[in-house]
Length: 488
Image 1 (tube, one colour):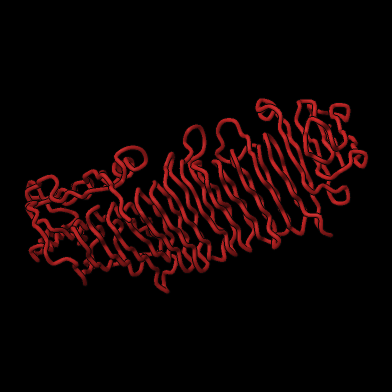
Image 2 (image 1 turned 60 degrees about the horizontal axis):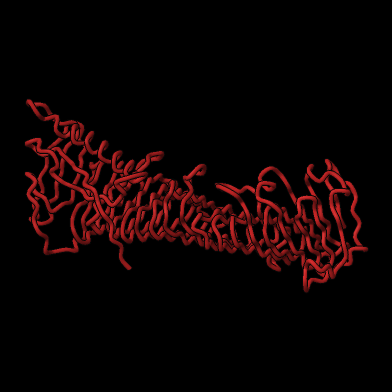
């Protein structure tokens, strides 16, 4: 699998003759939007480093030294700095900016100098590099395929920022026993980058095919800018994934951790939703998982409690936890399931959800076999089918909500397949209806619904609630709290 990624150039100055751009680093972060902001910040940082190196002009001594490892020629060029700290480069570029072709890749056994605090790798092909644990920034160019290991994550509280700007990079960032919670900011924008982390990681994934694994007791924040991303949360790691504004792409997420995880599909509001799609499994840790606006999200919980939210059409949401599960339908055709292993489940459809835009009308199939209370919170739907659970110990609560938004969407139509007054109740939770005189309940066989057998509840706005197999005479309706109506 491959991807065609356009790049922009980042430059590093600081050669002895002060020439600008001794090394040009291609970056696959987008030239517009969030990726452009990353490129801008990187360039500003590199300019600052270059300025520190180039202070030797007019007889001055640079505060930061330069080590340029020209792998094409085998030559190492060094300029000392007054602080004893170095900016180190692994390149195929000599000290005056001449670029040579490479023939010996892959390059293995490369080690970052002990006093290097910043690292740039721009070497076409594969290179294997061991970090020194003290770099505050490492930048890998788009044509470089870097296998990089940061062995200790620097000093306690420090944040090592690693930017993989386009190649097929493999990054392993680990803490040591003396510093297990080392902090990393790791940015991936490769055509096939992967991260294995055991510190505190921030990962920015670009238009690429990336794999991120969080291990041990790590804390990982992962920002997705597009592409196809796979994230694995293992051991007792804590992982949060968020798509950038308007970012597309796909996410496959598996929570094998004992801790809860989160997935958010945009910076929400207005038109900033992400046109992405998410496949996630909550595992024992559970968590809060929000699908993308592209729809076809598959969000499945494990034994841990989950909150699952669809977005675009065609979503599948399933709660499996015996503790509790909350499932929110997106807009369009949705499937929501509470499995036989689940306990209390709450289902919402046709009402506002995180990041929603426009009219919210959910046409869903909702089914539950949970052992606790099954709560259905219902708004706008042109056609939805609901199936509760009728075994001993289970109960079904159907709450129909009407507000300004649902009224604007017009009438709704619901079918409840297994309503029983023994363990089921309907609440019409709306001041618009107010009392029993605003609804009509009639018996099965009504000519307006050919082929249907059951009771039909018609509301004042024309909405219908059909109860399959129920005789209308067996139902009672009484005023409830705050103007609601209770039917059982």
